[in-house]
Length: 129
Image (tube, rainbow, N blue to C red; front, side, top):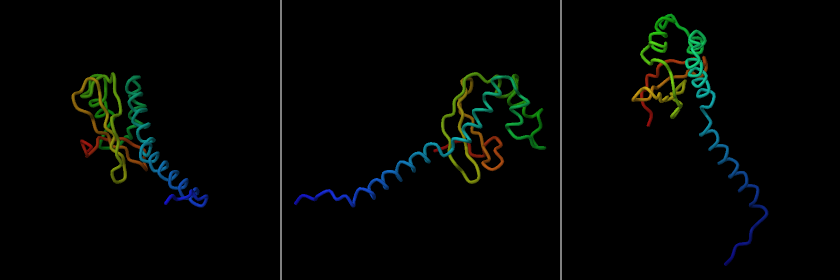
């Protein structure tokens, strides 16, 4: 037997489709602000604006500008930043882990973005599933 399309079914179906679309958008772009902050940080490093990049990083007493330059400066551990791209991000607790690939490094670097403070740090979680 053939079922007739009921006009009463249209609103719930449209609502369900809309809800699925919203969930997919939140899943895909849920960490957009944090990824954008990491991209801003990388752009500042590429431009040689180390003091500004340090402010974006989020200065602390335990990580001075001298330490920052030893890591991110032109002669630092991560060296001169050339090409880079954000590979993946994942929400973990109060922050977001953002994996960044650098052309001159073999492995991606995991950065931590604290959501409330909007500051960066090296991530305690090195890889993402």
